[in-house]
Amino acid sequence: MKVRKIVGLLGITVGIISASQIETKAASDWIFNAPDNTYFMTKKTIHTTNGYFKDTPVTIPKGTIFQYNGINRNGKSGLPFLEINTSELSWPVRKTLANSKHNQMLTKGIWAKKSNFKIVKTPAYLKFYDNTSTRKENPYIDGMVTFWKGSKFVDGTTYETNQIKVTTDGYLEYTQPLGTYESSDGQPIDYAKIRHTVNKNGKVYYYYNSKISGIPATKLSGKYKYRTTIKNTKIKRVTIVPGANHYIGDDNYVVSNIYSIGGQTFYTTG
Image (tube, rainbow, N blue to C red; front, top):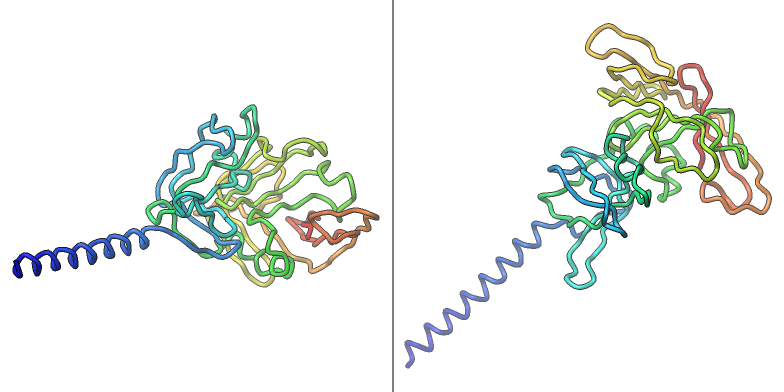
């Protein structure tokens, strides 16, 4: 009897250790915490759908970088998951959702497993803007950068100008002017993958291999075929918007940050 009791106790002890080991191992397989404005990279191709309706498939390629604020938890299991806002991704990725009848750009929840994602530093093509005071002061500004063509924000006409976008997965896009109620997720006029980035002396240099209609560029001969230079002029212009409550500014004014792109004037807001 004594022998059996001892063996039984040993069995219980071994069982407890094994369960603990399994639980610890499981925890190490998940990303449970991440600060706001964290950049993630997909470690494999992810096949998912839009979020609410779940009726439009979308493929997120391996190596895609996106930004997400924090980590969600499943209400039942407590396990973490992410959603990807494809509005910030390049046209080749977002087009299936942009062209769908719902135009819902957020994916359904994807388990935040370390086999699916890893946390990465701000990519070089966006780091230039993350160092600006606007982004340091406003944690809700998205990872993607949008430049509006013009000398400053004009209330009611922002969408009526062309835009240059730097997507979180590393593409330059040039868009057509949009009406106030038109989606900005639609097909751009032209786009190209950024192949190399240099940040130097208050300028960012983007190198890529196919001409982008509408974006000023210098033609090169060598590994990269085109270069676009963006300079932060450090000039800020204010637009008064009486009685407004814009998410891109304060209660009654919007600050435009002026950039020179290939000698042309563009601005960001914030």
